[in-house]
Image (cartoon, rainbow, N blue to C red):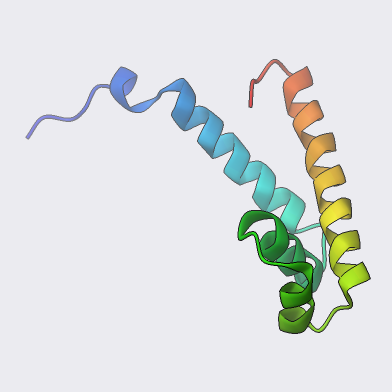
Length: 88
């Protein structure tokens, strides 16, 4: 059985995906689990603030604050990565 060549498995897309996953994991560790869950539900899963508030026990205002705080931190980390020459 032949092994795939290194060039066929390491692509710019794979590297970018790995960087984004690593970035998300690092930022997630900076927040309380409820903050991250609220961010994820409203931003990634596109749930309404009311639904996220009900599922997490947070107020709607806290859901929006969680989204804002996490997005701000993600932007900061993305700028740091970009300053090193990586494109996300």
